Length: 448
Ligand SMILES: Nc1ncnc2c1ncn2[C@@H]1O[C@H](COP(=O)(O)OP(=O)(O)OP(=O)(O)O)[C@@H](O)[C@H]1O
Ligand SMILES: [Mg+2]
Image 1 (spheres, protein in one colour):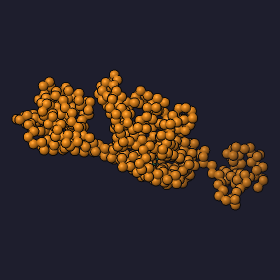
Image 2: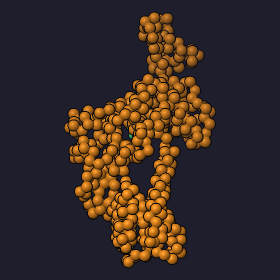
Image 3: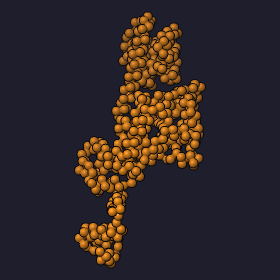
Image 4: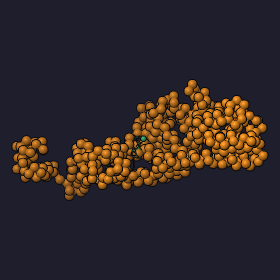
């Protein structure tokens, strides 16, 4: 519901505006003085202020300036008396949206100006939202990878996003893409035109938790200089994303559980019940079941959150994703660093696909970025990769069928032969590389 504040010392003007706009489902608040008007603006966060320039206690222009600096997103329509056009023009220069002349003979004029101003407020907030979107494209297509688990994941996101599901729990190791999936769920859903609000439970203290989530009324505590909406209210009709939910304190868990059940809460220090329409997505890189067993996470909350579980496997369990991701990040890094690195040598690819990626996709992304900035010029080669990649590099035969089975002796002999070829049959060199004595090497060579 749109929210309008009328600041005018004439009671009948306030009543008239309330009556006229009330018909259009607009909530109207009134203030008789400038001071009261600013106070009300704090308390009710209006979308639009109708402001009389002649007030008993303050210059209307000062009220306008204060509104402009404190709440740049609020529209202000100036109400002027007959013959005050000049000051209306001044006010527009200071940032008023429009002006109206008293008395309001034509209520249609008033309605029209208000509707126009509210449209502008909405359009501006839409523009802000779209800008945010352009910076961060979060659709499901941003999730790269052709492995079976990743394709299934994309399908699942699309399906769940469009469903009525109210609570979703995403689990997966650090760097597997939980945040990406959470955003995907929001932007693939009909909720995409409403906010996606996120909070990292590990980053906020227990005392802040309530006021962050539920908001607070003015004066609820010492620092509460004005009323503030919490994330739950701000995310209304959209998505609330609670990251690292395993780190929420037991106290906060109890409070959150209650809200999750009823979807009704009160601001801190407030008496009014606020009902919101929210999809709640939570994520954790520590297995929540284990936290429940440890007594660190409420079992009842866990079941509440785990209505739709989404698990993202670690990167080493979907190795087909490694190179498509690497190429994607290479393109990104090339653009960012103005480079034109073409790709990976086959040897580098082999090392990358074999590496276990304990830091998952984030590690891969960081590696590519670093190599692009510091290392390669044409192609990314093994020498550009960190040393621990080489340790994985020993290629052992992978028998696909019984016919391909080899004995250890056969594998050993084949390897010794390869090394001997490399060092042009220099036995001392070969023995050193193989970590055995010359005599042992000679014996092994005789066994052939
Ligand atoms: N499938 C993917 N396609 C493209 N980029 C990905 C993919 N998975 C992860 N990323 C990228 O990897 C980085 C890490 O992902 P994200 O932040 O979502 O991980 P996370 O699971 O939330 O990690 P943490 O538990 O540490 O918070 C991000 O830059 C993200 O964009
Ligand atoms: Mg994350």
